[in-house]
Amino acid sequence: MMKRTLIPLLALCTMALRANPADTVKPAVEVGIDEKVGQTLPMDLVFYDEKGYRRTLREVVTKPTILNFVYYRCPGICSPILTELTTIVNFMDLEIGKDYQILTVSFDEREKPELAKAKQESYFNLLNRPVPDGAWRWMTGDSASIRTLTDAAGFMFKKEGNDFIHAGTVIAVSPEGKIARYLYGTKYLPFDVKMAVTEAAEGRTGPTITKILSYCYTYNPDGRNYVFNVTRVAGAVILLFAAVFVIYITVKPKKVQS
Image (cartoon, rainbow, N blue to C red; front, side, top):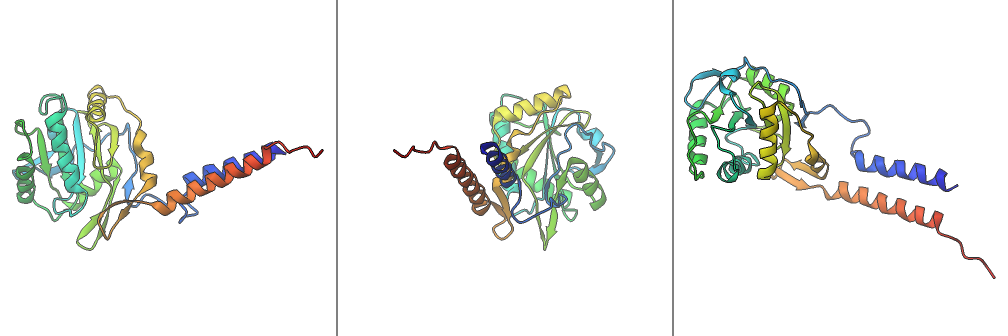
């Protein structure tokens, strides 16, 4: 009797924690990250650097690389990501330009090298250590190159008016263009970034432990930021407690009537 009760309840809890209450069938990823760990980026794609020069990814990615996708006019999470990267450069005990490099790519084909250069100068003012030329590149490109690269990296975004809905992540890439690890959100521990860079340098891949956070946070297009999804989490917690209560009643020893 107890086994017949426990098994369905445990299955129910698992489904509740994994499922999206708004969907009965898991949809294809439209906005977010479809991880491509272990796969290689198309290194012959051509982009423009912040100086306006045409460069292939093969020319640019010559060291372990922290790749990040933003658009320079972004009113939301792009700025916190870029600010966090300046903090990483300032405090991580690896030297940019020697041990690793950063590649920032705009996924808005309307943006040009002049804007990329202005953004570079703005964020470089936050650095307390010098950055060698080419150690942190700020790229723009045409729509075909952008879409090919973002698809290969599993970075899915959606245009909404003049802006975009997109996720926050940085991607560690090997000098050969192999994707080693994803780090999510807008805050990254220097240790996690260092491990990701080390794995990329050695051509190894690592699991994305913090991806579970995407279950608790959703994008708010009105505020253009990530907010805690109270309804989804509360629903899962209520179902879990209900299951525990039923299990407790089922297995609780009954008092013997005298």
